[in-house]
Length: 409
Image (tube, rainbow, N blue to C red; front, side, top):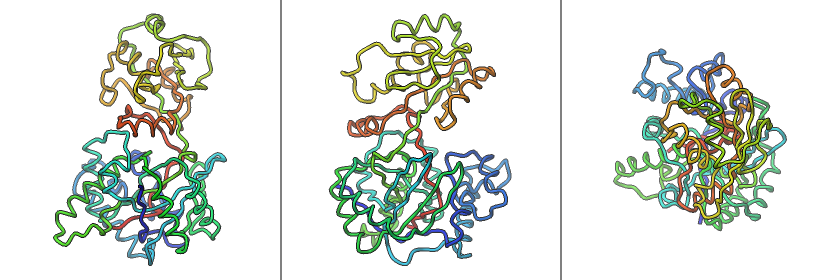
């Protein structure tokens, strides 16, 4: 069963929401964050990426960063820009982008269920990023950004959510790139129904936010060890999440560029790919179906269609990004570990294929690969199989904003 819990969210005061809400801390560079907060003292990036207020040479993982984040968060609370809800509640968060709408439930989710794989993962975490967010949580005693979860659609959950959004919203604003963000508090009379409806879901799946979830678990271990009166009901036993039905989740491709041809000519690379792929010249930049990869090489888009059988492979090895690594990057480019090889870069699908062409045409890269998006069904199948997806397999849009719902622990 999947357990969701009401909690007393810390939220922007009326009239402050658009100023406070910010992109997730980990999708912007320090330079981008500095530009975004210019002229806006309320931006939550001053909490999530507090190093932007320190000298350029400051250690991004130094004590001053976490101290500044704590001070900035406390200032927003003390000034009345952030207010804590009077009673524990569930909330609804809707995002609308390019005519697509996704509606999720904001809740505190059990860390025990995360530790016991009822909340399922598909990605390895990096220790340095875990350390950073764990220290951030411990310094603020708050989880400041939600984990993005999904589940297989359930009609009984939809029915309650549809009732909840009939009430006037807590906030409704349009942010960067025309993305609309709307939030509601779930009425008290519907809360128990929503909790009970989720209890029938066998599992929740992390779509995005593995490091946030892992860091919440690590912080809980420390706080539990330091609390001789631990009961298991403390807020630190849960992590902040927004939970969306799988049919609402929109995944974009995560494309790739490689900086050199590993000593090959373009013609030699094509010759080496021919045994594993059906090649087509002058295709459009974006593939239309799973199993197709489009490659930009020497000013031309090539279609690569895998010709082998994949049915007998484990779910993770059937992914297009896995086949690209196994049949192209490893044997032809000598890229053995895509997580660490500096000749390989990843380009989020939101940037479009024009970025791929510009990288190759400018000489920044030698070749680019345009991918078909990984599906939510593939993500859940790999999670069910206890598999680990290759790095940068999914790019989720729209991004959840930080600062709209905060979970004090």
